[in-house]
Image 1 (cartoon, rainbow, N blue to C red):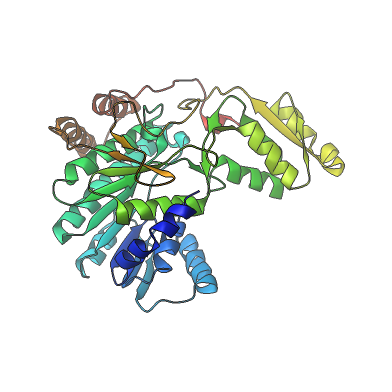
Image 2 (image 1 turned 30 degrees about the horizontal axis):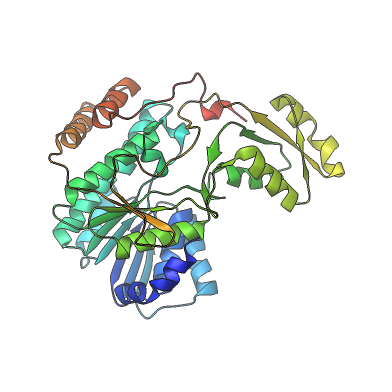
Amino acid sequence: MFSRNVEREKDRLAERVDGATFLVLGGAGSIGQQVVREIFARKPGSLHVVDISENNLVELVRDLRSSLGYIPGDFKTLPLDCGSPEFDSFLKARKPYDYILNLSALKHVRSEKDPYTLMRMIRVNILNTESTVAYAIRSKSRKYFAVSTDKAVNPANAMGATKRVMELCLLRASRQVPVSTARFANVAFSDGSLLHGFRMRLQKRQPIAAPRDVRRYFMTAEEAGQICLMSCLLGDNRELFFPKPGQELLLTDFPGIATRFLNSQGYEVEACSTEEEARRRIDELLPRKKWPCYFFDSDTQGEKEAEEFFSPDEDVDLDRFLDIGVIRNPLPADFTRVEEFLAGIQKLLDAGRWDKGDLAELLLRTVPEFQHKAAGRSLDDRM
């Protein structure tokens, strides 16, 4: 999708990476690995990658060594939690970075199902951003980039609302350090995604289940890495990049994706009317090159029917890049809502007790457009 943009800007991208120092947080996830690959290929002065997944960091190193090889600069991976004392000590022990890219996130709607995982989502998506952008300010970094999501626009779930609060925190920090971000679509077959689940169901000989009334935009991990790199290196302060919908980016429903995916694996869809039927018929259907699928009307909380990249009141530039739109965010007049949110969260953490209502109230006050789609079921209650 973005190959024309990357080719057109290749000299500027190469010039800004060459010899510069980079810290990538959450660099072993599906998007993070592609961002690391994009930077690594352009020979930075140093590239340090932090992620809590030790196994994914090992695979990242094996992948880079087996494809791109080595770089003259310093390449290092560290299995650390960016909210930990060990991470803080690491930062104090080395020189500042030119660019800090934050790809870490709790991204699942299901993570808002109880007050403890919801607070963890707030810590990862907001508080860790606050602490690392404060480091960028102290270090006088050239740019701080953090990935957002299309679900931050008119959010229907707490994950999208936390990312919208993160965007507001970045705008507040933009008075002291240049910041940029990107909103984009679901990354197809990324770890933990429904499409990744399709692959796992085939591997384990299990039926596929998906909502039939939900549509999503999908991008490849490579495209996600490219738009993040473009925003970090070419975006001006307070700018937000997003993919322009077009021929390569269309809203798609899950039954259509499942059909094409199964066809590519040599199977046809066999629609089942219940989960139980789909489980029961797996051994019967597979020898006939059919795969049992259960498509249902969405009845789980926090699901938007369709995604959007910007709201009508945002200042959008669709002319600067071929396939990328740019939102030019103004500096807000004040940040009272953000500051009250952060103070409220800290008060709950200091008390050591909170419930979902406490957290929902703080999110609603900070993001008035947050319209939570309530339902009686969580995604964990679905096959």
